[in-house]
Image 1 (cartoon, helix red, strand yellow):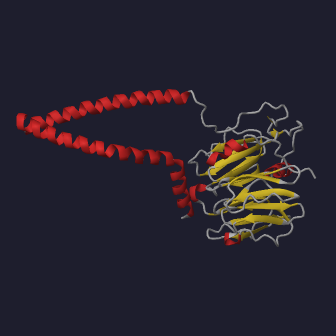
Image 2 (cartoon, one colour):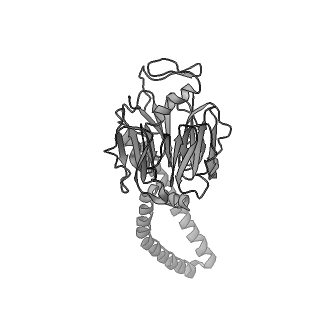
Image 3 (cartoon, rainbow, N blue to C red):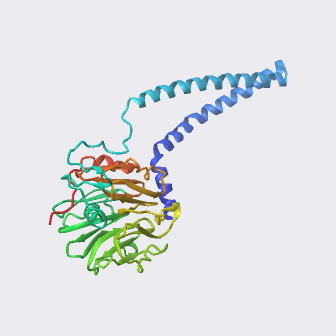
Length: 368
């Protein structure tokens, strides 16, 4: 039901201008149609009295055909003019322009180079390298959160439920955000949360020994240092059934599903599998995972990205992404963090969020 409501909301938000235009057009056209109908009835009566019934029908059909043909010519003319005009405009960006920074990471011999061009080792050391970047960026419905190198947090977007009230957060080493709330992991292994506490998803005050956090639609996930996982919040679709997980090194939480990355580079998932968002069984060589509303993202050790699930807005079109060190999947878009601290995006530009983060620079893990 929540997903249906979201889709209805997104449809009306996306097509609000079209709906208003159609309503206005109907208000204008309705009296015109009534007037034309009146004229056609009078014309039919006149022709039938002078030419007979069949001849009147044939004459009216011919008139309507000529009028319809004229309308089609006019529509095509204006459509071509509009297409030419749009062709000269800047198209909606799917990703931020590629950088030519010489310190950018490069893919060579299936190994990812660090910003200082030193090649990184394979799993599991490479997983640890990516995890510190993965913790630096998070996206949610109308809200994006970024962790700065000094342990403070920045945020843009919606704040109706207080999910952006992070100005006083200090000593943060990881962030996660979802619909109406935000979670922060501190360097001492404790967790803080702000925003809406529906289903108890912000009840993380007693968590200890946590090394990673993930925020779902109505549930929160914590990864402990021993490789086990804890969860609070709604469990209606089994998204909190993580008590048996072992050897986990990273976690991600979607709308009603949860994803775990194991130390061998494979991935596990629980919860609702609509659109195949939990079909990660055969993924290999993964170093980071992220879960969106109806899709799941995996970052591979060579800096490329894989995706499963709903692709209605192109949020799973990730084959072109390269040199990525962290990914954040949310609602109908994906954010990718590059090793030089800049950000790339794919999917739906919800509420102009992409346009804001265009100027984000120096997004990097804290230097402790």
